[in-house]
Each structure stands twice: as C-alpha cells, then as structure tokens.
Image (cartoon, rainbow over all chains, first blue to last red; front, side, top):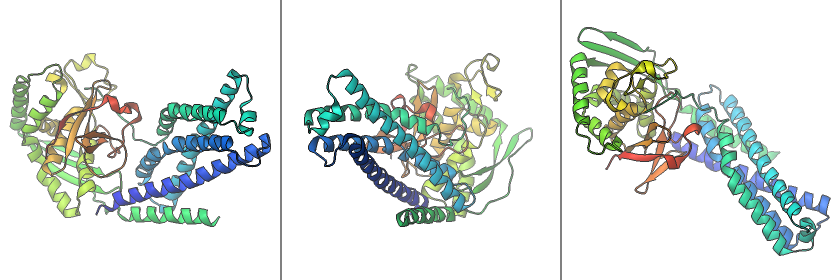
Length: 172
Length: 256
C-alpha cells in the first residue's frame, strides 16, 4: 500500500467533507438571516426555498473548485520541517482559498439578482416573499448559470496562488 | 469550538503520519568528470513530496554518443507522417535502448536499496530527470533564438535528442526529457504516455498511476500529467500556464 497516496486521499475526503459542511451550513444560516432581516421572510415558502437552494448550489459549485488547488498546495508544502507549521500553513492557505471562492459566489449571487431586478419591472424579492415560484426559478437559474460560467476563472485565480515551482521558458 | 478542535486534530494527525514517511538523506553532489573517451556523471537529487535525497552515477562514452546521434538522424529519415511526426519520432527514439540501459541498473539499485515502489519509485525516476537543468534543443541557430540565458543546442533535426545523447550532454528540452522518462518508466513496468500540445509548444509525460490532480482519459485509463522541465512538479499538477486540457493529446502510450 502506498501510504502517501492513501493519506492524500484521506486529506481530500476530510477537506471536502469539512469544507462542505461548514460552508453549506454557513450559507444556509446567512440566507435565512438576510431573508428575515431585510425582507421580513419569517417562514420559508416554496419560492424562497428554491432561491436558497440555488444559492447553496452556487456556493457548492464555486467552493468545489478549491479542492484541487488545496490538494496541490498540501503536496507542495509537505517539505516544511515541522508538522505544526505545516498544518498551520495548510489551514491558512485553505481559509484563503475558501474566502476567495465564497466571496466570488456571494458576489455572483448579488450581481445576478441585482441585474435581473434592473431589467424587469417587478421586484423580485417581493415576488419571492409572495411565493411566486416562477420568479424564484428564473432568478435561481441565473445565479447557477453565472456561477458555472465564472467557476473556471475563479479556479484559475486560486491556482495562481498555489506555490507551484517555477518553469523555464520552454519550446518544442 | 469542539468541532473546530476535532477538525484541527484530524488534519494534524494526517499531516503527522504523512511526514513520518520522510526518509534519511544521502550526502552527494552533482559532478561531471570527462576524459577523452568517456564521461562520469554524478547526480544528486531530492524528492519534492518527502525530501528524500538520492545519489547516483553513470558513465557515457563519446563513441556511443556519436553513434546515438547517427542512429537518431537515420531514424528521422524514415518518418512517414511529417505533418504530425511526434508519435513516430518518439517511438523510434525509445527503440534505441542504449540510453535507458545506461541508468536503469543504478535506478534499480536505488529502488531496491530504499524499498521504493509504486508512486515513490516513479517520482524518484521523474525527479532525477527534472533535476537536470533545462536546455533548449532546437532545429535552428541558437544565436538567433531567444533562450533567456539558458543553454542551447542548435541545428538538431526536429529539435530532439535521443535518450543517450541527453544523458551524455545533460542537455534536454521538454520532449527529449519525456522520451527518456517514458523509456525508463516502461522498463520499470509502469504505464506511461507522452503528451504534446501544439498550442502550448510543449511536451510532458503522463502516467497511469493512483494519485490526485489533472489527468487525460485514454482507453478508459487516467493518465496524470507530469511536468518534467523543472524541479518540484508532482504527478497530476498541470502548470496554470498550460491549464487547458483540450490542447493536450497523447501521441505515444505504453500498450500493456
């Protein structure tokens, strides 16, 4: 058995589960709080549930993109002498990648909702509060689509932060 | 708070186990001593994943170097498809086993002595080649080429050296390295492939081995990218500047 490969596999599973649970729980609470605080939505109606699901899916799609760069960072940083320093660095790097991906997902959610509300005569949040499922589906689709479009760019941005070794200027 | 502590403890335990696999180091240096007829090469290199250090020496001969050059030129004259010659070129160069035979016994000794197998063995082989500084091998004149101060060998047909020429001169570009690594990995029973990108004007090795990261699917198998032109790159790490996987294609695969 190759122990290094097995441990990288375990780190990948452990990272994915902890990041997943933490991020999704945080997003759910955040959306719930924003709904109550700014739009007076006390109970989740169907439209608001669809909207919340789209936000969670969007965050999930975006944050999934950090797993590969995080594992690459783990493998590249493994030369650090002390285990404590290594784990501190790993947590620091992980937190930075999550922050970038999470901010990108939140910005996309805000921008897409804002743009849609500007190009239509209706107030989207008012409609969602009134359980207008059609509006919720369209807003949700816009959020998820924009996330899928921008995911590769955000991933590349995070990849640029991975401490990869330098490359010579190559040519065939 | 307790959950956070548990997560911290879990990661720290995994990291501590990971670091336990670090091996003892050997003290040796890179040296090149040549006489009229042969060159003694001493190489010293480290694994990026666990900082293990390796030391190896091999001898190359001027006569065999000249012969390898002649064989390479002769084999290139037999190329049928000049529009996309790479698969055929690499295949012909790999058939010349002199280069592989030069280092394979030393590598096998290290592998046996240090108990290396699987990914660690592959990493030991690839990192030995990564440790040799990059040089341009080009078809034109080096003086007319922007090399950025790096060593350059000019007037080489199709811009590629055979494995023996590479080991003798310790000068090789991306595909020269990929060909040597392919031949050695094949000798050790691995399942390698050579991948090229016309868009990026670059070549790499790809290996069907359990690891993490970027890969190309070929006949249902995952071939993980492995950059060979600089130290520190691990299997599955595709440099961000070469990130578009659709620009890469397998031109030579080991058929088990």
